[in-house]
Image (cartoon, rainbow, N blue to C red; front, side):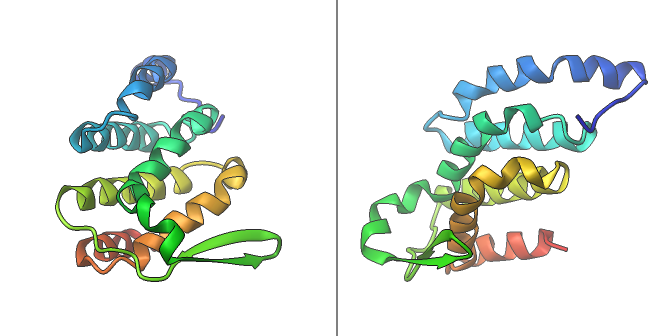
Length: 158
């Protein structure tokens, strides 16, 4: 674990990471975009305060994160994708992804911001099992024609 804080408030918060993640697990699967956005925001704040604290829970967090980044385009995957292999990793490219209009755009932006926070605050090795799916989601987001999605991701990258 990366986090190891001796100050009392941070150590108290560290003891609450597991109950927080377990409590949010059901909420991350909720159909309401605002609920999932709030979950990603809370988890992002938590990982900024305690870097590395979500490492044990990556298996719980990545599937809902991927779903939030691409749930509105899932029906188009068979018709608009191309798979390429790169060093033994299959990467799915969206050829003409539909634009993210309306509310679905905001959950996608929240998901991308949380993904960036998660990736920068944890050891990269823990994300290896999710590399193919994560790359597919990020590439789909970059190709999105709705300006806010591309703008949000590009402003946050360094």
